[in-house]
Amino acid sequence: MNDNLKNRLLGRGPLDRGCEAGMAVVDQYVEAVLRGDDAARLFPAIVAHMDGCAACREDIEGLIEALRNIRPPDDRV
Image (cartoon, rainbow, N blue to C red; front, side, top):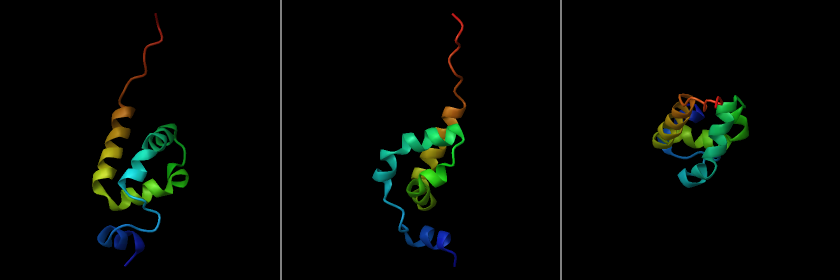
């Protein structure tokens, strides 16, 4: 059994610090994703947590999608 599947079935892996820890830096993670940075490298703990927590994964992916769909403000006056 691979580690990813094992962590999903049995719980948190060594990098997963839990929901609260992930939410403390979720804004930074989302901004990195939206900029196109390597967010998985920059925020391995959030990625590890999302691998095992469907609720947080859905929330964060939903936030990213919502922000991608927001138009930037029109600079014309």
